[in-house]
Every structure is written in C-alpha cells, then in structure tokens.
Amino acid sequence: MNSITLTGNLTAEPEMSFTSTGTPHCKFTVAVSQGKDKEAFFIDCEVWNDDISENVATLKKGNRITVVGRLKEDKWEYEGKKYRRFVVTAQDVAVSCRWQNVIAEKNIKKD
Image (cartoon, rainbow, N blue to C red; front, side, top):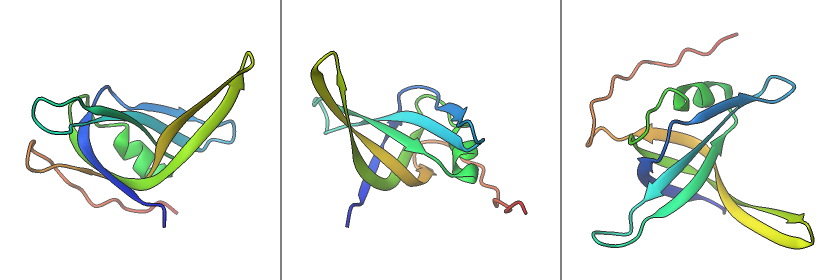
C-alpha cells in the first residue's frame, strides 16, 4: 500500500488553480525537519478534491500541518535530459493544534 504521512510547516501560501473543466487543484510545499541542527526536507504536495483544496488554500505560510496521502513520481524529458521528482497527493490535511490556535467548522457538503 502506498501511504505517506508528513508533519511540517508550510513554506509559502498554497497556490490554488483550476483545470479547464473547473476541477480545483491546490499545490503547496511542506518543510519536514529531521531533528535539531539537521537539514529539512522540502516536500511538494497537491490536493484535487473540491472541499479540501478550498480549505488548504486558506492556510498561511508557517502553519504546522500533517499531510496524509500517496507518494507519486513525475517523470519528464527536456532537451534530451531526463528529470524526475516526487510529489505527495494529499488525501487529508490537518492543522496542528499544538503550535497554533485553530477554529474548526463542520464542512457541509454541497449538493
């Protein structure tokens, strides 16, 4: 089973966009610390669901979050050189209540 859980801080404001068919897509990067005095990993993430994309788009740089999702590999070739990167497609994103004040509201599904 392909599942990953990350906890870290948003490195910038999430970027919301829409596909040509109107599907929302939100991209963001999480800085995951490896411990005191160690380098952090910067992990690219994305969400595609209507409700979660809109909620993630309201988060701010520096917010501490936990991301649960699937790891995928993007491959491409440019000018004869091969590239690849890993991206987490989030299924859930939670804001840490330990490091910040959070106001939670029930998400009511739209018909």
